Length: 294
Length: 111
Image (cartoon, rainbow over all chains, first blue to last red):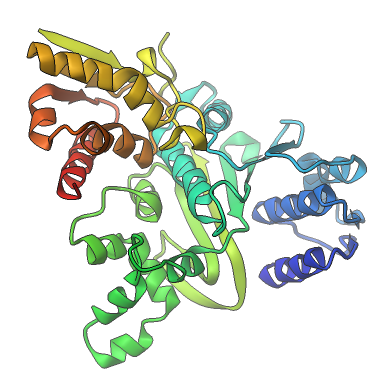
């Protein structure tokens, strides 16, 4: 998928039209949808021709149709601060540049009705959304705040008992963002400091970006730089939400690292992904409490 | 005498980002429009101010840091003044008062 995104981005920058052949696709994962939809919107809003065909496989075709992908292909799109794709019957995709806490609260309320049959609040899940939207707004674009969209696709699965959420931004990614910090800025030189703190030489040599991402999520970067415990901010806060059972099955891809956070497995990728991608789930075992009081 | 702010009732059920230019219902907006005037009055009159954090959709950390750390950074209050004036209620997310205390300590340390 990362190779696919990199190739599409190359074509978009060259303003070349794209036709995505989907007819032989047999399995379409829900996390791939947000990528396909966001790429489509980026091409169309830039007025670059973008098209695709239908998968022959009925299930893959059904997922794409439900997502609003084909409807999106047929309508002109203008460059905008916000997008909504999908009719709300299972798969909906949103995009914005600002922090939209009301929107994500609605997403969670809608999900809770599907999961539990009544509206609940899931404050930990909301925190994950807000941290990610804030990160994209503040860090995804090196030129200016709010320069990049975040994208989120929400898919209700297994008769609504599980809700899959895929979040992506095409910013610079965690490592490029940290490595581009200038002297005097917060977290300048943090990755080097983390590496320097590793004990012996063998461990130091093994300490690659996959290990760094593990450390960042555990709050080690904050501790290294400030000497204080992290206060739940940013990526460590998202891992803390997973540990508190506020979300489930969290995965992350950024630059050349992919991580299954719950399994504590991080690995290097062959291809750089320019941005940050997260996938997580809401299900009937996550923490929640009663809906809003009047 | 104790004064009280219920964030969900008096400000928003959906607290947002850190600053006004990042989205609606920001920590900056909460601090400037609601929290600071009440804190100022409470200190002047020797009252305590209770902040009820329950009833919202959930908080981003930047909202809380900007609201409470911002009282030290932007309004010149000290950590000790805030500790003497503010109390927090959070039955739904019991870790929040401790996190907020950390934000205020960090803001004091970074003055």
